[in-house]
Image 1 (tube, rainbow over the protein chains, first blue to last red):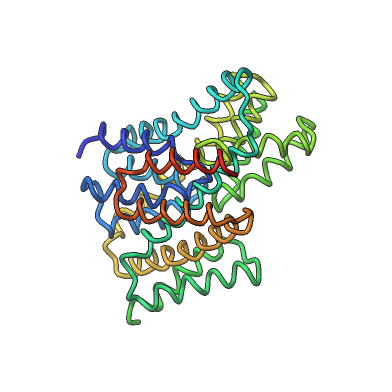
Image 2 (tube, one colour):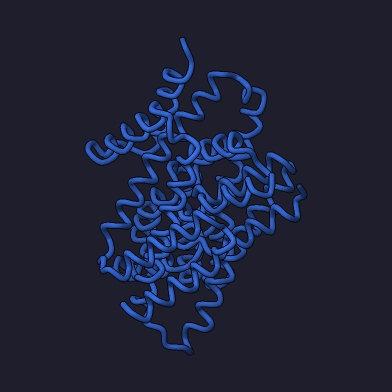
Length: 172
Length: 168
């Protein structure tokens, strides 16, 4: 594993991060695990930490992986390259957008469908290693229910999930 | 320069990810009189249809609108700085404890909670769209292909977006 390869993965995936960070988490998991940068266990740790700190999830993932394996510089470079793609696209859209005619409502509907594909893939890939774990789905279901029925703040739910995890996964 | 401080403040005070940040950005922008509500909503939908974290895109677009290219750069840097240092701090603080059973169980619980949250995001996405047979088929095919092989990512992207753009 080297820093160059890691940065390249994040640069590549940055280009497809339509529809918010969750869309790319599933693909990131596949990429990072298949090239042997992370184990499934480490990925769990990473997602949890990235979600508990302020900032968009995908951006936090980029920073965290970079920092964990290559120190401060690694975190900095990985964050920069992950954001390079979105930044370039914004510039490109502003320059080209004035000249060509593209039905933007139609395009954003098509992109939204693509984002749906990606979020489903993320969901499958996040839960695939835990399919037989009842406790896992219990926590997920409780969080989903609390979020929808009682509008509890996501951050509160993260910590609640964590404490439930301690209760269920360690034999106190 | 004011753009920089505003976004630095928003980013360091908002926990809970990108979607929590957007309403705060909207509130600040309207309060400072940088933009009217309709203007912001147009900008937000532009931010949504580009790749990248939504909060980052929104910040860059607002920055560009208010203070040109320099504003865009400053806004982008300001919105990413606090998460960066938060991650670095948390990662270094947690490192010695990562082998503890309790910390591992806690992180696994958070991970399970994340699955619940993502399911909610998915539900929101499903509700916001009109569903026809074509769209269901394209989405289902895309999911199957990407689950089988990650190398099909770009193919799935190009084909699904093109098909839906031309037919919808």
